[in-house]
Image 1: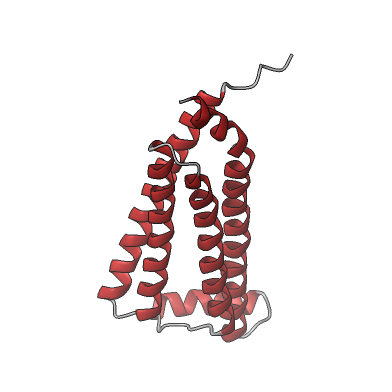
Image 2 (image 1 turned 135 degrees about the vertical axis):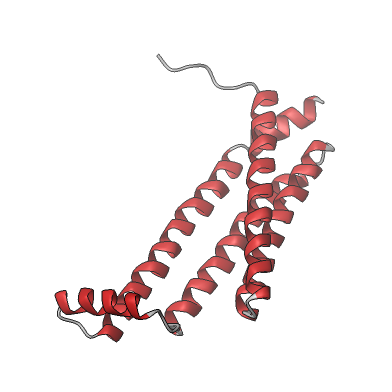
Length: 167
């Protein structure tokens, strides 16, 4: 037997909790990576981190609008997910198009060479394969997660609107 659907007020409270947690998490993690990239002198990484932190701030702004009774907040929640998805896919595309392999310690170079030899590849081919798998996997994971969050918010718009109308 299926449990009854949640009351609009409970759905509203859950959406606010999820948005707060997700927004703060994105803001903290992306802001930290932006800071680390800036300290390391990596302008592209710092810019990507700032854009992602902005997506977290967008989500928090949407939550604030909802908490103050504005239905426009749901648009901000959904929009933040699509903005974050676009930034991450752009970053992955950039890394796939322009792979950069930093100098590694001799021990790591030897391990990479051994792995490449076992696969019948050159070290450069192995590093390119690793790069494709890493950023391709990140693009897929981001699409699944951000797409799932956008769907989560979209499917709860009507219940949130009912909860806001009742308040």
